[in-house]
Length: 465
Length: 170
Image (cartoon, rainbow over all chains, first blue to last red; front, side, top):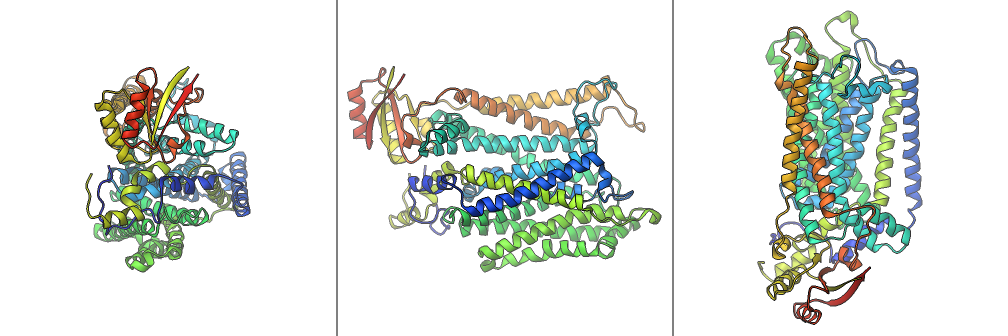
């Protein structure tokens, strides 16, 4: 049961906690009237979200001409935002699935919010390919249904079609994984509730969960298999996103390095977003005992790893462009670094390659304020990475006579800020109504990883069960 | 009216020993409710392994075969399309969608099976034996019709139960 864990290993739950204390600490944030600051921030993010939806409506009504796209630059902010959001989602699945398979106990403090983040990020991502189609009302053409046009089936060999299946599967599986994990915690909230209406709502949300041993047995089997399925799934999703570029015949896009490079970049930016959200959540809800500095350090270590992979990928691309001896490929990279979008390239290089290396210093890795700043810097950097790959490559293609420069219109900018608004609004609602830390999972590791429990263990000498 | 005897524990290791002791005394346990999953408890209670993963495997295999068969049918039988003389049957390019549909089919079916087999429902009211079992207490439950009440009370007390209560449902 409670397997021995070395006393050198940092405790994952600080302080002298009991099971009841854990319940109280985590259920607390869902009770009472939210503070004024919550209303103020939610009001602000909801305003951005509303403006974003109005701009989407405007785009659908007037057409894609309202955007800054032109003859050569057919993909710009829309696809940049799509790839950026979908990448952010990947950290949640990494934490909930891959770290579960590797039995990393530190995931329990952060997996719930990270999975919620995944779902909200995928929702934001999914908006862009849909509105990018222009004629949104014909979006159902992508589904293989019997039709009067032949029947004409979708193009199964197109990476854009693979994307449709990858994103919708990813969203569905993440949602199911997250919700099934929430059932026991909703039951805890229900049983702590005082008012009838609150009991009723949380009972429905928990689907009448009681914690029967047979149910737990099936629950464990379900989470393990879903984790096993999500692991290759998450890798496939960003691989397929990278195929959107890699299978085309555009210099700078047509490279086999893209799948691993995109997956590493996705996890890199996703962990940055998890840190942004977690640092605010732990402070606002006083969850420092559950989301400890140790958790933050572990995430920062993953940031160094994935950030370095991304850095090596950038350098490999440059090397291969030179080594290939292929003038178009060489020009594509010369143009990225020194062309009209040089500033975007160097923002990307600084934010993604140089800045995460500071995390080699332990004091910085364990500093919450510095980590927060870095998490924002990395997300800016990763946004620019996608912009550099997409827009700068398209702005300078084969024929110099069709070269162009792309600048976004206010419509595109407000749609992007609108998705930021949507993302944060959903997260704020989630943080108020749902248990933000997986209560049952934290209880399950209390005996092995609680601070007080570890001390007792240490004093009593090594016991075995 | 169904009557139950509810023995409450406050430690998982005490509970584990008690489950083994009660079972070796030949008393039938109706259920054990815990706030978090306790590894090995299902074995100690003599529960069979879950077959949920088998459901997942069958659904995944069906999803893979079904998707691949459908794509092959559309591109070779229903509407073969000559694009630059490329083959109608482009198997490697069907891999991504087949994979995604395998995962989707296995996951959705498993979750539905999980809800169905556990009897989780939005309509049925759950039987809540003690509200503390989702907080910090572990409950061992006996059906009053199946066991000798006095013997059960005695056994629970001996094996470290902190409370023994009765609970009835209509």
